[in-house]
Length: 351
Image 1 (cartoon, rainbow, N blue to C red):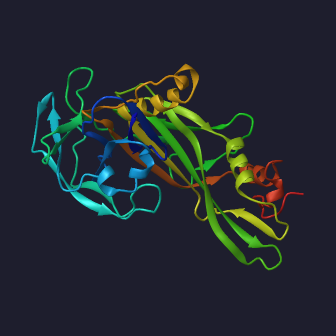
Image 2: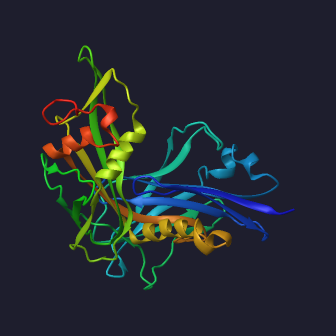
Image 3: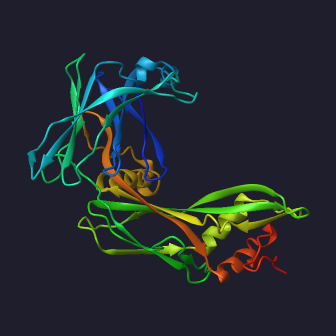
């Protein structure tokens, strides 16, 4: 009977995910699945480590058994710091923590994560080293292509447009306004998400019905081959994309009118991901399209003696970004959103 190795990974800049299934005929061996995105701006860091498991028959029957997908108390998990090619500083030891988990296909008693509280050094590279003390098996991050150890940390970067609270963005549907940032050192991929806040009111009484928002991804998995950082990167603040998102998210109701929440303003979330994360996401895209979609290609992994991903990322945001008066009029009067009863900049409905 064919044996099936079943393992799960979730990977993101903001949100992205996948499930890996592998058909194997070889004898069983321990197959860990690792996921970690380190962020130097944070002081709490998590690594997720699960088992791939090899069974006869239906793999889904084993997903509800915690021992099939989690290591219990047998792992020693450490990050080893390197500087200029040499180990530099004390290893950082992670402790196991239990996290609540929603019910579903997989065992739902707990998520087992490994946690470290403390700062990481942007100038160092970090190698993952894991020892299964029950079996003596070891796994962790692979060497880089230049034979060095450890992943590089994505560093801080600068946002150019919008650049400050109160900045006003145009909402153009022909030639889009631009989003500008300056590349982060050691980053290879970027996402930009916009949180658009608005309020809904009763058309008869003007009573506030709802104070809410929608999130719109303006830039997704943009590859920028610039590990040195500091270079200008430009993409679109697409009026059509935003208006389409509002059209799809909201329903027309003559008894309700809406207003952009100028007291809050939009929030622009920028996310920069490391080279390993870029390669991982691109491998998922290539698996789902083109010639590779019909081939059993191996998934990208930078984990030795296992599968998964160790990479880094960095987040930045600009709050309280406003719309120009013309943009407010476009929001109210464009064909995509005119039926949603947004108010123009002067507070009137579009006629």
